[in-house]
Amino acid sequence: RLKSQPDIMAMAAKETITAALKLQASQRYQMKELQTAWRKRPARKQVEDANDGKTYMSAEHATGDYNIWYHRNMSEGFRKQSERGKAETRCKLETDAGYTRGNTDAQAYVCYRFAKGNCHLGKECGHLHEIPSEEFEKALPISRDCFGRERHEHHRDDRGGVGSFGSAPEAQRTLYLGRVGRIGNTEDNLTKQFGEWGEVEDVRCFAERGFAFVRFHRRCSAEFAKVAMSQQSVSGRDILNIRWATGDPNATSLNRQMEDAREQLINAIENKVAIEEGALQAQGPVLQLPAGVSAQEMVQTSRDTEALALQWAATYESYAQHAADQAVTVQMSGELEESKAEQTASWNQWASYYQQQAQLCKSGHVPTPQEQVTFYQSSGQEVPAEVQAMLAEDPATAVRTDVEDRQDAIAAIEAALAAADGPSAKKPKA
Image (tube, rainbow, N blue to C red; front, top):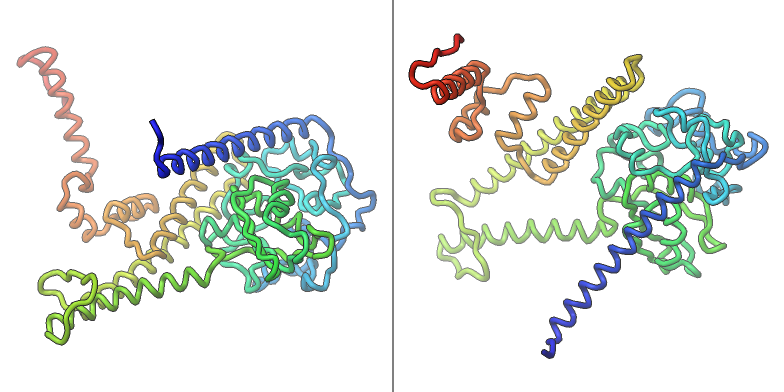
């Protein structure tokens, strides 16, 4: 049977997707094999003299007063990236990666100097000399980056520094590359250069305008690449200025879409009002308002809902920060390792849940009664009466008390005994 043109196009698209998935799986397997091989050899010294990398002081080893406005220690320096010039060293995984004393410590982070290519300790370093693995990121609290530096809720004004756990998940994996040269910089070239530090999901290069975007599959890969490629050259003539990207690389387009959606809503409400007043005939789709509800009331309700959603977003963000801080506190405590790992994982899960809920609320979502119950119960608070009243309308989701659960358990036992021994079965004592 001769296949139609749409069938042929669909088959070609399916084959392309299948080939891409196979290539992705092959790359992940090869990366795991390389990491296993690296851990069998000692890490080499990248530089012989510790002073060779003095301008790249890592935050965990920095000294001096801490500036809360710039999120850095005074000893780290405040020179602009444009004033630093090209980096003198660069990390080379094929020769530098290997095991260190940090591999014997379950709480060790990745070495900042290793990422910069100027660690003078080699195998004696107390940090990891390898790129972050998937297992490493799963155990990493959201309040820390892969180098152990503290992350913050908001970015710095220049979107540099460690990063933010309050931004969108996609933005935490996306890097903005500034000062990209026009010659020799293509999406394939950038994928090859940045793919060395982890799996790359997407690359958008605008070489004629001097910038590009690189999105990684994992957050830790983006954090490592930002440090490793800062002030490096990818085409031989440029010096990259790397910062964290916004939620969408095309922020202007995203803002335009939001404004268009708002205009469509306003036009629909105005058309409905015009029809009721007989001023004009409806043009295009008309918003169907509930009976007895005016357009002004609907706008006010929409504003109230948006304000309530933002209040919940702020609440969820504060509890996400609290959970992340608790995870770090548990890690620093003197409890047994098994108990410490279990508690840390639990706090990290709650921090991730609160952060996801905050992102939903920022988009206008107001938590359902069941989500509100989960929040109050997880934070050890009593469920408000108004929330219980809303749940009472739906018996399937009603909040149950301990007495009700105990009564149902006794009834189930009585029914089981009656079925096994007949009507003469004795009832258990409450």
